[in-house]
Image (cartoon, rainbow, N blue to C red; front, side):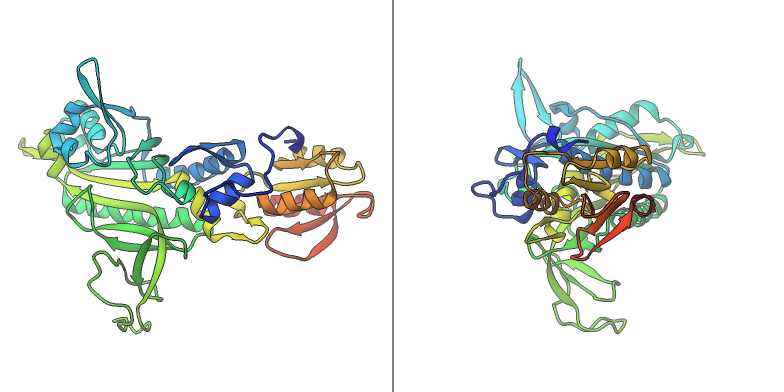
Length: 407
């Protein structure tokens, strides 16, 4: 893509009232735009990052046997009444009346998934059921701040599973947990699986996936050896206690929740009559699991932990482009076309009325992992290579640059 046509342009200053790093940098670099408190547009660069995140999640969900679908975002009151959550979740759910009928905007999809499942399952042979989606969620967030970390409208991956036994649910629950850890690893994030309370979702203990960050609103106590972690809201131990396995004292830290998993058992299935006939001809209720990852929250979370005074530093796996190509001295189009033909995704700063210093500043702000500079100084058939997280530059051939970018 030619940067001269990219919408919108970068901004020199952060938006008024922005407090968090992700809010300041994502707006300045042209990834998001705020419509109102808790509501953001994903601009072309931001959408590219979100789609990269979605694809990583999609690949890992497919590996554990889940199938992708799309569920409605507008829900009738009657379905939510079956579990009692129309009243229980009233504070967090957007509810409204139209033509004498009451509706809600989705803040989660357990009830809708169960309504779908009970129409299509009848015997134990129909199990397990594993379905996931990427969809918008709407929550009446009272503290809509911190950029896209805490919004009233956001994109989420939610997976739901149904099983014929607690044992099978437990088995899949931890398969999902392993898949989540692989998702975060592929994004370069050191995430800690943390025991937590179920909140509005369930009375059972659940697990969150917490990313250590000074800007985080959650607080966890964890073992540096990786064998124990609890959210401080339900913590049974105190900071400083020695790890039972000899890893040293437990630590307390701020963190951002980027995912969570829940086991509901048969509680919702019984209320909604999601049942099946077992091998002995007896009616049984299905065991439900629910598993979420915040896609737009991940966009913001990555920026919170991967930035410097110059701007964003994207991990290669989710960067909006593979390389940021900068033209000086009127050079660049030949290299741009050559990189594209090699299957490399390029953002080419082809702007003619912008100084070299401003181009380099925009490269650092946008945060693509590699910058290539084409100039007379670099020489014919060569480019200046610089990685975003390094200060060092080197002159290499275009062929070597292509090999590195493809590796």
